[in-house]
Amino acid sequence: MAHLIMIEPDRVLAETYREACVRAGHSLVPCASAQAAILAADQKTPDAVIVELQLIQHSGIEFLYEFRSYPEWQHIPVIIHSVVSPAEFADNWELFKQQAGISRYLYKPHTTLKELLATVDGVLQPA
Amino acid sequence: MVRAEDSVILSQQLLVSVAEQIKLPLLQIARLAELGHTDRVQATADSALQLLDNYVLAVRLNLEAELTPLALEPVSVSSVLYDVGTQLSEYAKGYGINLELNVAGRYGTVMAHRQGLQAALVSLGLSLIEALPAQESPQLTLQLATHRCRYGVVAGLYTDTERLTGDVLKHGRRLHGASRQPLLNLTQNSGAGVFVADSLLQAMNLELKVSRHHRLFGLGAVLQPNNQLQLI
Image (cartoon, rainbow over all chains, first blue to last red; front, side, top):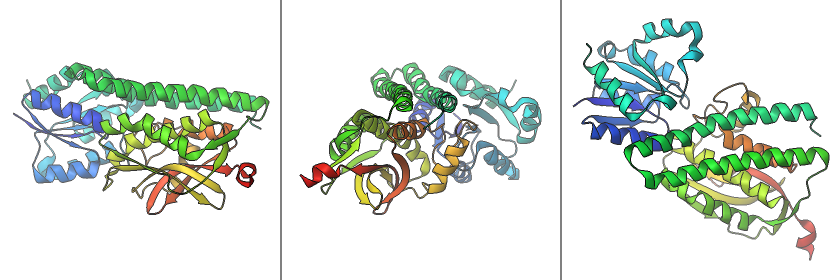
């Protein structure tokens, strides 16, 4: 069983993802904002973090730079699960991926719950 | 009067905004169905249909208003707010938001296009309901309220979030069509409901304003009282 933190600003989606993770045997703390996610990680270190980039006030990218600035959180796998398509990063994608230490990028509208959970399992037990 | 080419650009910007926004309910429906929560799908689908209907009405009314000023009629604000509350109640419940109706006082009638005004307030409501939980608002309450101001009568939706300032709407209007998240401090989405409401009110020659109601912050339509009927 893994402990996950998810930044998801939409309450209905957050609750849906939480339920799917619980059914799969994980615990998931949904956070509506970047600040709430930092506080949640401080309370209990997660095994992986799932991040939406498009948020109110501080973006998911700001969260990642903040999150990675703490030495104890530098090796925690991060999955981007966003309504922002990776194509929108154009040539900057590889640089961003490397700097922020992103394990996987999932385009939210095209990612089923099953695919999300498979990705979580994949990053928790790398081949 | 808005030039024809301007209105085409405006409606295209609005269409992009609505298309981005409509992804959210569709995504919710897809994931809820995957978990087998088909009972919760209806309110979500209804919200998407409402937004689409309101967008179509906004475009239609603006096209009509280009040819001739829209015919406005005396409308009871209280009755419109009551109907808006009824339309939004199921969707608000899904987000855990308490919807309150505060129409104390006598405001008589105002001049508006009834269907257009109701659509504008419903669109605003849909946007605020989705945005409120992410605002870390102390109380998840949305109040439908009306009050008099020096410009006329304001009918709107109010919450306790302090991030709803005049600048949010001003910058949002400027970024609308160019940014995927123009109402940066208000909503994580495209804010299509706010822009559809703006467009509907514009067609009626009315204004959408950030306003305050007692201690709450909100968005409201500035309406002109129907003086003739008040004299009678």
